[in-house]
Length: 405
Image (cartoon, rainbow, N blue to C red; front, side, top):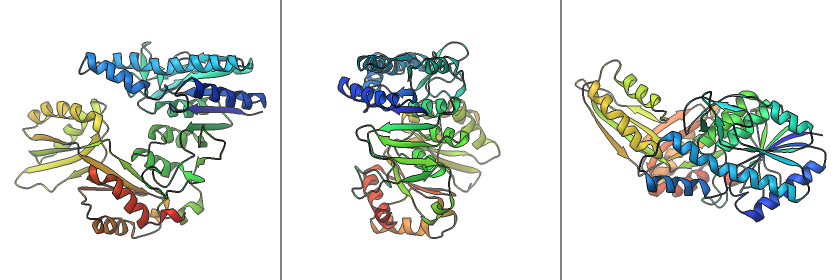
């Protein structure tokens, strides 16, 4: 008997028939004698519909009320999934994030998990029940509902797997696993049998929609090995695990594109100690995640900063920075939203040279201009025009011959 945590994404539970199929899969695994904790997302499209309703009523709804609203999507799915299991003869009980003992910090819409009290879940598992948990949500110390950010159901599943010391963690989605690129964009993309935490984290943070980046970071921290697989078939998926030696033989493992980025240019600020610190402190206090950062060489006492933020935070970033610039002696903020970030990722970059040269030459040959460049030990990212994003992904994939993996 194994203890298994499974997560089913929005497309997997998109309608009544799909929820019934998921219930049948769960029952079959339960009938083999396994203990099961199931994390579910809101049905596909529900979260976007709720956001649209909110913004139709208020242009800038409060983050607390958005958490109240968006948590409803997963709560619908847990009840329906439990009912579906009852319908096929399996004992099941549904939990909201709060009922599951998921405690978070006080940040609304992007909360971080602080602790999990798994005793209620343990008791129901001991009683032979399948436990269905609402993903994406928790509760803070003040009793307020919080949400974990888009894709937060992945984080719920990984965190529960760690807290419950699960034997297996499976992330079910609408794709067979992790590919070398988005197969809808790059037709000859290949599914990977295994990938390291670091590679998966870089791909997730670079725009790959398979996993939420924070969930991968959490898995690496707590050593939770998990498998990404499809809920629409029984094919093996992709195992995400600690890096092992042979992985370095492949220089580049995957290509990712993120179209949900905005470029922020802060120009004509005083080139003196503390200016950049005040800019980025204000963004941090506003819970805005900054990615690529470039600062030019100051001239005549004036400097410019360029960086990227999530597209959904671009207006918030401008509003946050305007009073800061007044406080530090002036400057202007400009937002450019017609950009995309292209990234190539692979642990093999640690021991191989020429990756940047190959990427830059391939983009140049395709007449794709590079606006910003950022690197880490296992990743190279460039900002390009959004209209060139998919072409750039195909060009990079071909340049590194990833179809041969």
